[in-house]
Amino acid sequence: MELNDEIIINAPKDRVYAALNDPEVLKQCIPGCEDLIKHSDTELEAKVVLKVGPVKARFSGDVVLDQTGAPDAFSLSGQGSGGPAGHAKGGADVTLTEDGDTTVLRYTAKAEIGGKLAQLGSRLIQGTAKKLAAKFFKSFAEVMNEDATAA
Image 1 (tube, one colour):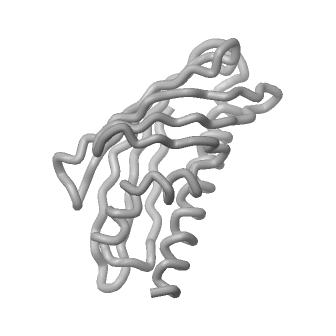
Image 2 (cartoon, rainbow, N blue to C red):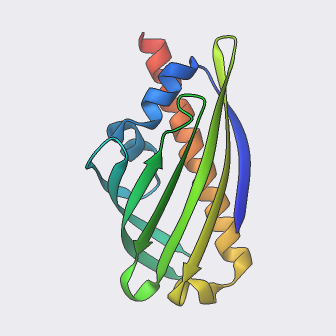
């Protein structure tokens, strides 16, 4: 499954990039995130509770950031296990383009799932993934807007 989207954020690129690397900001924005631990500049550990159709699961996983193209672009990859519900792995490529006082964030994300979750059907999974991605970026844009207002 692949997801693509773009969102305009009312903040300069360097602030957007810094926020995308701030565990506190990410924890606030990731739907169902219970814990996000930064082990290094490129390694994070997450605990997230998700409900996909009738299946609710607590996922634990690791995320690795590749910051080679920073601050214009970066990618991340991760994998997690939801116990009996199944497992997931995936990644995303993100580009940030400054446009005056705003930043255009574009992403392409890919995910693979297995276990009980994979039996739910691709439409339900795809729909849930799109909703979760939209929720994350909406929250992220709101946090960035609050920061801009406060500054």
